[in-house]
Image (cartoon, rainbow, N blue to C red; front, side, top):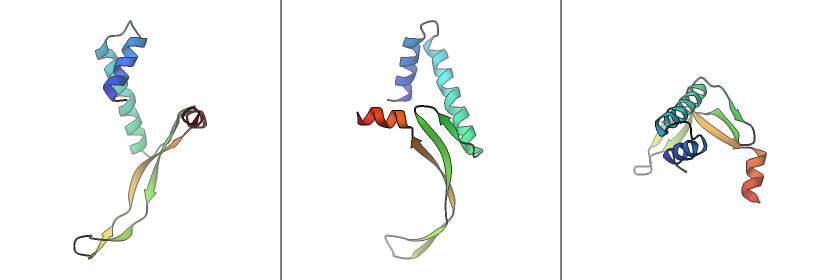
Length: 92
């Protein structure tokens, strides 16, 4: 499902809102989620899952072309953990 599919489904469900208004709603939700993760906060959606930010430690890698060692700095990455209800629905 793409973002435009999500907007389409929302506008079908909420017939009193236009597609443009639904698009603003979806964009606002995603923007607030991105901002929360940027601040290091956890996002939990009951029955769906949770989003957190994890830190990957710095490590040493290799350039595959030359074989030379390369320092890979520490970085933060978003992580999604699926909720129990969604996991059971997918596996049913």
